[in-house]
Image 1 (cartoon, rainbow, N blue to C red):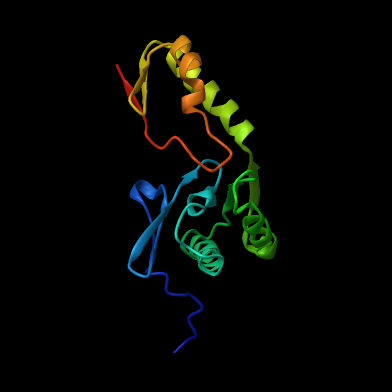
Image 2 (image 1 turned 90 degrees about the horizontal axis):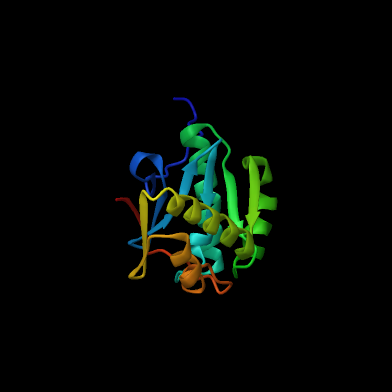
Amino acid sequence: MSADKTKDFSHIKFGFRGEGIIYKLNGKEYELNSTWINGIRIQFDDLTNTDLNEKQKTKMFAEIIQFVNQSDNEKPIICYNSDYKDAELWKRLSTEFSSEIKNVEISDVEKDNIALYKTMSEDLKTGMTEINIRGLKLKTVKDLDKHWNKTKFTKDGESNEKVIFWDK
């Protein structure tokens, strides 16, 4: 019998169409956003506002990296926001696991807001999109400007998760 170097990651799986990573720990599921644009990008900020301690986050980080390497034979790109409270942890772990990682992308709230505003305003300019954020219906760039302070990302780790895009 040959030695099998693969580890059992039955508690980790990719989400629908390979987007997102679902990790089961102590009977609870944690979902991290991920995407496949020029390589798999994993957004570790999704673990910031959870009930997980640093030891659990470290274990999850290590196992998710190994899972992606083993499942897809591909090194992931690690993404995190430098303004969020776990930034130092993600920085340390990215250094520690650098041989298993393709790249690290660090953002901040200001960069994220610039990108969000650009995307939303471009969509609204087409006249084909309406954006609903926390009950606010945005139909024009003027609407976006009026409600921008209610919709932008904040430094305390809040995100606009109730953003729904649909075509008219």
